[in-house]
Length: 213
Image (cartoon, rainbow, N blue to C red; front, side, top):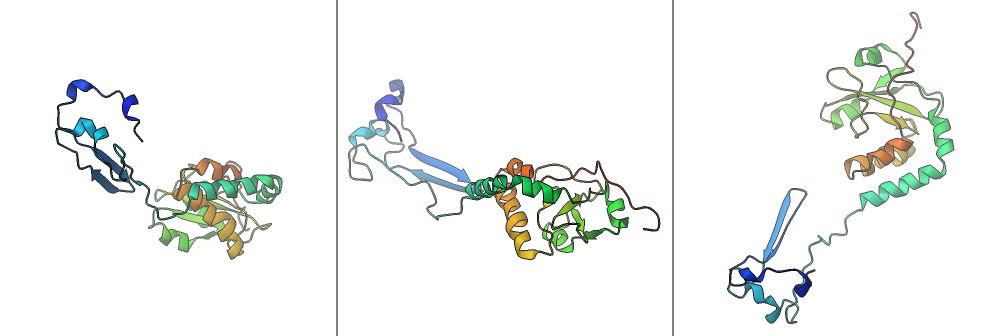
């Protein structure tokens, strides 16, 4: 909204022909609108014209999509708030998970870990992830590796995470682990909230299996 007399217009250019309207850019889609007085000698005297709402000097446009889209920021914050209310229970459950093998070779050799084939194809083969075959409790750790074999330990959504529910518990796993990561990391910029309650492991405490185990 422009408050005409408070905008600080430079009257030295009042005789120039100017472009009036708006331009927006979101999600790789451009949208522009040009008002009727554009490029005319009356460009700087819009207050004397009847606008698109039938009032003098008044122009109003809706620049939102109006599609009623999902607010993923809010969904992420709501999930985070609920997790914080039971944080001690969450952290106790996650404390039973194994530490990640430090590279892809170790993960592949360690029989306690299962390769996540569906995730591999869903991410266009960009990363390779493992989770515990048989968890000690209901929780498990997801460990993800780059094509070079290095453990991805960045908290930007590309690395692994703690799973409060092992994938065996499919519905709970989707509701409390998979969907929230999408809300917080893929569809909004709130990964820091997500990883606070679903931390990834950096292999510091990894203990390989002894020979014969």
